[in-house]
Image (tube, rainbow, N blue to C red; front, side, top):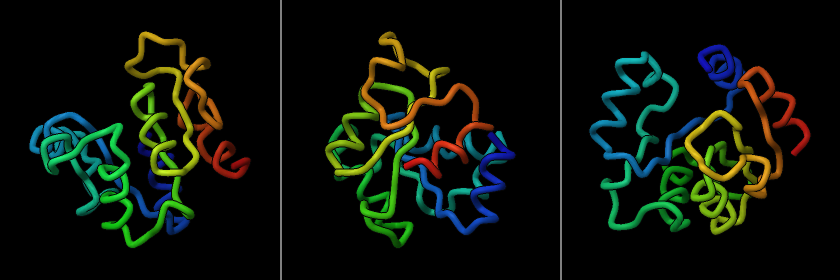
Length: 127
């Protein structure tokens, strides 16, 4: 994932995190994995707002903090909740097939499906 994030950042892509995991824990994990540098202030855990995924407002607030709009954004996720959140926000979604879902990733209704972050750039150009 680091290589993919570095490539996207070098291309000027704004990156954020929208998760239902607790906000403080999410920031701690990102810091420990040395990934915080990619996301800045655009990390929102499930307890950071009065709403959470699949409510579009959770994702829309991340996008707002990035200074963008849903029309120039997309979500990368791994669950039905992530797909529903993206759809509720009116944006495309790429699903990874190595995440936390009991439903096969191919059945989640994503716009693109990837099996490795090396495939992310190609999926982005297709959307």
